[in-house]
Length: 184
Image (cartoon, rainbow, N blue to C red; front, side):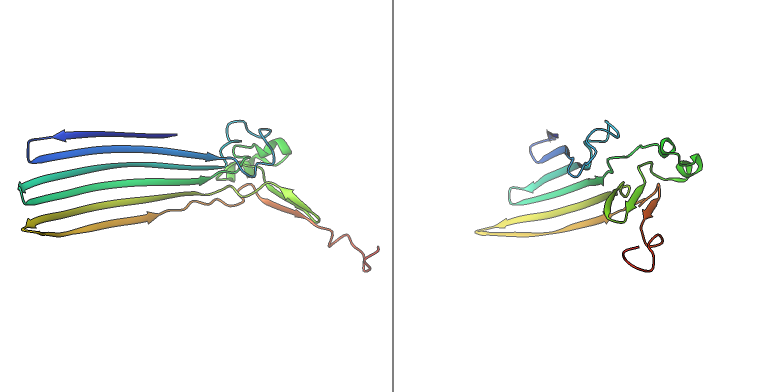
């Protein structure tokens, strides 16, 4: 899904603005071994990338040979890796309600067996990236020469939320049940 809108405003012959907003979302469902069996709402949302942004651009012409361009921009990219069992109620497996209440994100616990891959996974991450930009430049035309000076200031910020195995991680091995000999 992608959406883009732009509005141009001519304040007068020398002063022009434009404002734009954008939205983009991409979904992926790779690695879902359970299909839609666990939760129909989240079964197709393994990876969700969402871009939201806005730009305001201001161009002012001082003289026919001198132009100032200033731009403000902000963009947020959210990359959320969701576990396909998000929202799973572990009390249906016999786990106590206190464990469910203590879990920051409800999902199937990770259960591993000695020679089997196991079921369940970590809760997934939410990684928002924020980009803020202030750009300004002045252009001066003098004869056959163009002189341009300006600045481009950006703030890039990455955040991270990872609740890990919030419903627990359980491993069942054969180390304690094997005898002193491999064949016992």
